[in-house]
Image (cartoon, rainbow, N blue to C red; front, side, top):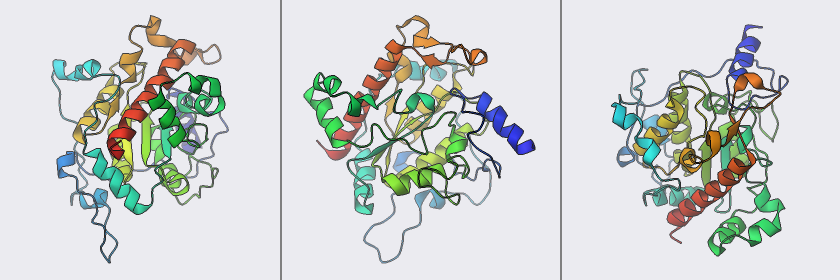
Length: 316
């Protein structure tokens, strides 16, 4: 009963609440054993071409103590620096090393995945790029090429893009409910990497109040990079947590690992109420859902960000 109550509380405090029957937990969320922050300059990909299986870098980076180093203290100016970042990321060429390592492991160059909540699911986000040919026909040749390359990824359901998903849920073996071809011995992240073999992952998690959010995000990022998958981090439009810490954490983690940051927050800054509204059936959640105008901006800037990252990673 206590575990069920914890799940319900977690669901109610997320941007896109899941249905009450979404899961029947049999275990708690994982405790974190993540590494302290590192810069990508200190990040070394496992050596290929060796007769022995390389140890995951995330494990190599672990300290001998369980102490977790949090994000650095920021000045008032630094705390808001992410707001001035461009919508479409400036991509460091170092991600090419991650991508090429993933190709040596057999990652699919035509696949990407999304780690997010309800507003990242196909019907709200990218699905139209596979279901609406007239929309695609009106896009630039570059974007059409990107859509063609990633056919099959835009309109698929996955264990990592569901109502109420948080960073902790991505590491919880019960979150996928044994669906999507997942087993209860693997997390949603591990399942998605196994069944879809993506070369890129967009991480856009909504509002949540888990105190270990940064630890979980760092764990997910390291797991992706160890698998040769390029993470694309993203900000969100709302500030339900009141202190903008989720967007700030995303931008700080992107800087730590020299990863691309899609600054969606900046893309909707000119819309009334930042393109947000309150659902009548979920009044307590407040204005956290995207209006139709904001949804268009969401999918288009997301596609443009994927396009830029893909071209830098592949040298196109």
